[in-house]
Length: 87
Image (cartoon, rainbow, N blue to C red):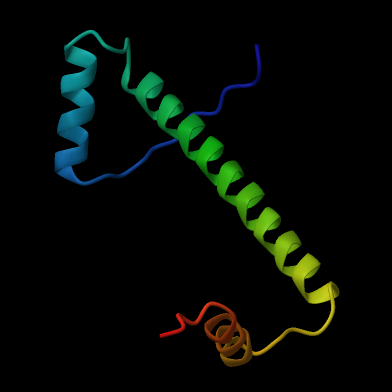
């Protein structure tokens, strides 16, 4: 079993009450279990956000490396001209 370290945490009274009710309801055996699961979820979310951010940065790099861009006004003007309805 990994080393265990004892920590003291401070939280708003409302959160402490939710934690106590969760343990009292039998969903978890202890407040420590609740906090450990919350931290595991936080780590997973943080890792997902980091991966998403890196994917976005890679997409931006790919776009920048693909060559010069075309001004949006020019693109839309060309599209309007191409698909203009002839009356």
